[in-house]
Image (cartoon, rainbow, N blue to C red):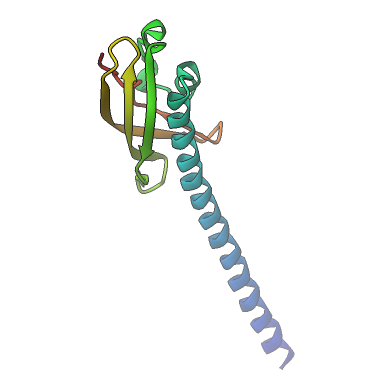
Length: 141
C-alpha cells in the first residue's frame, strides 16, 4: 500500500513538472509575441514623431547591410497616421512578419500620401529583443 502511494506521488510529481515546463514555454511564446507587438508599435510611433534615428536603432538589416537613409530629407516628412497589422510568426517564433500602414506628407509639397510596408522582424536571442530587417520606408515627395 505504501509503495502504491509513493508511486502515485511520483506520477503526480511528473505531471506537475510537465505542466510547469509547458507553462514556461507558453509564457516565453507570449513574451515574444507581445514583444514584437510592442516593438513594431514603438517603431511606428518613432516614425510618427519624426524620430527616424530611433527607428533606425530598431533596425538590423540582414548580412550586416547598412540602410542608406537621408535624415536631412526625412526632416521634411511628417507622418500623420499609422497602423500595424497583427504579427505572423515562423514556427519557432524567431521571425515575425507585420504590415505597416503610414499616412504622411512632405512639408514642402503639402500632398498627403499613403504607404504600405511589409516588414520582417528577427528575434535576437542574446539581447532578448526584436529587430526590423526591412529598410526604412521609402517616402516619396
